[in-house]
Length: 105
Image (cartoon, rainbow, N blue to C red):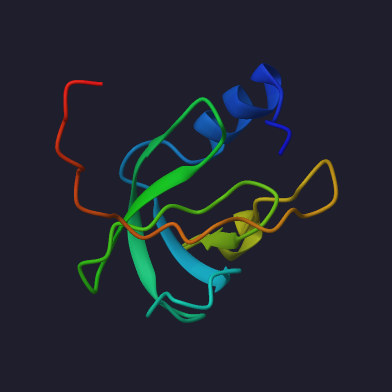
């Protein structure tokens, strides 16, 4: 999987600062309980362009750049969606797992 450029990540951080309200448009994850229309608040955007979101239902699943889509809530004129600058890539299950014990390796 290719990561977005530094410029793209900087643009995403400008478009979706911490606290921005978003609504889920689509997510390519068959195991999530999130559905289109669910709402949340942006926590941060990592260097890979994943928009980490605290969803109103308690989930903390991230929005993967180029795969999933959200839109800003509030200003319909500025209902920008995360748009890929490359074809969408399937991603593995993004659910959190329990940390594995360190076995001295």
